[in-house]
Image (cartoon, rainbow, N blue to C red):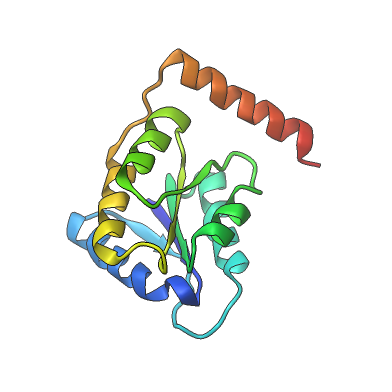
Length: 149
């Protein structure tokens, strides 16, 4: 299950992503927003991130105008490794190396064609499991544990 969240700036692109996920037969839970009316990205990024954090959803996709706000918000949640990606190489690398569990996209930065390719790359690329990457992810968790109060 994929957690989805967007603000008004990401609403239109999220509709494209949802259609694409439907075509692929992938299940998702849509945490909103549900229109182009102005909202705070933090509300929807938080709900989707909590769903990934709790295990209700395996991964998340967040979209706002730049992708920056939703990625910052998501990364405030323990265990979330959100990556802002504007190209397929980054989406592949963050899955292989960082085992990222949330993808952030900027609707005003990438068009729908590229965004859907990034989504596919992110969803279809497994974590490599290489020792050096496992070690680094463990160190991220240690930093997180020390600094989240």
